[in-house]
Image 1 (cartoon, rainbow, N blue to C red):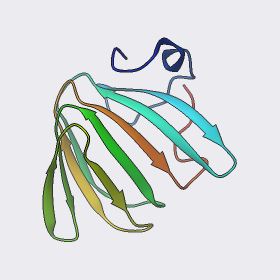
Image 2 (image 1 turned 90 degrees about the horizontal axis):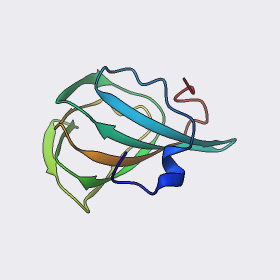
Image 3 (image 1 turned 180 degrees about the vertical axis):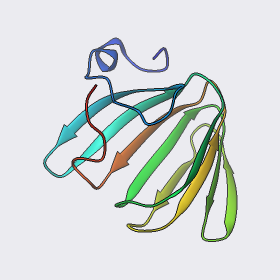
Length: 109
């Protein structure tokens, strides 16, 4: 969690669905924000859920949605509409902040 201030590292750890993905959770009744770091290369298979917004802080994300692929680097943002199928490849060392419309998208560990 070196890309984030120390207090973010003190937030609850996310029960991440991938081995090699660490996250800290900030949750409220109207959504969740998760501070993620990929500790190894990850392939996120096609899936969908509520709306999502993200920003890449470090590293590289190959995002596939709507039949197109975007390669995202530091400072770039993305938005995924509710119900839109998407997939990604996340490089080891990538740090992301993702905001989810769903208040229960992830559970604390």
